[in-house]
Amino acid sequence: MLKKVLITNIHTGQKHETMVDTDTNEKALIGSGVGSNETAVVEDVTGVDETLQRLTMSKDSTVDKVAFFSGLASCLERNIGLIKSLQLQANRVKTPKYRGIIAELAYDLSIGEKFSDAAAKHPVLFPTEVLSLLIAGEEAGQLANVCKRIGGAQKKTARIIKKLKTGMIYPCIVMVMAVGVTIVMSFTLVPAMKNLYESLHVALPFGTRALLFISDTLIKRPWMVAIPIFALVMLFKKWGKISETKTAQTVFLKLPIVSGLVRKSAAAVSFRCLAMLIEANVRLSTALQITSSSSWHWHYSTFFSKMAEHISIGGTMHEGFIMESHWLGPDSRTLCGLIELSAETGTGTEMLNEIANDYEDELDSVANQIDKILEPLTILFLGVVVGFLVYAIYAPIFSIGDALLPKGNASGKH
Image (tube, one colour):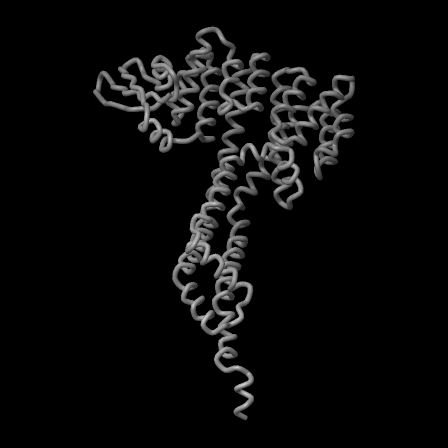
């Protein structure tokens, strides 16, 4: 349920309105971040108003996750109580859902629940991999350090996503314009062209017939356009769940360029997680199991799970890496060498962090170059669309002469 909180500063009289997605007025006050020098009035948002608010309000964002975990880590590092630390984050996040989650967490802690148990109720902010880290940090007394690490990782992710979105602006504009031009021509030029060619009984090439089919579909059955649009919307909406399936993740590893990015991303998250757990003095077998559950790609989840099995029966990290290196892809030999080096020098966590840093730097470099990578693909797409339209429209023109002056008549005049 949405709650509208009207906050008034008792000194200046300045008013502020904020929305909190929660079920009680008490939690709404916590989620609104009302201060000691402010008064607040809570109103329920119901019916059509609630529907409109949910459609137009800010959606979940990585920026809010960064703000939440970074702010929580800063408070915990300064020995501020966990409930108070949570309450202080209410004004840092922008979405009603996150304000509601903060309120729920503070309330659950106030009635004696563990932080990890309360967090498990909110998979939006605390997915499985994050929850696993929080449980380990809570048990090791390193919750502040864990939150700081999560905030740092989320910040890097947010930066990469921002660069990817920026790089996609130009290609998207070009694609929309290309589709728009095709639609306009389908309603204007193509029908006239169709009447001309039909009256002359000109044999039409495949490209022209395809363009005529598109035009007929848009004019006579415009509802069919909704099918691909709906499919794309559902694809983007369900992309998170689709990308979590083994089938999709396996396909990603077989695609050129994409496979390298997927492996680097999964490896960076996994090795950073393992290094953080070992630094927090978590047992190696337990740390490997937690890393396995926090890995978003099933290859790396399986790898660390098998590594935990090797450690539990008395094996070493280096031996486990060699035996299970086939899960790590093209970089497996290099990683085995680095783990052997860390075993000899006693620099396990440093080496794991170095591996994670290298992968993150490579991903960051790709994100910086994304516009240069997409530019030739965009030009290629535009060239294909323009070439198709030119061919479809002008190819039949070369046959008009044959239709107007049949070969038989032309030969009879000589």
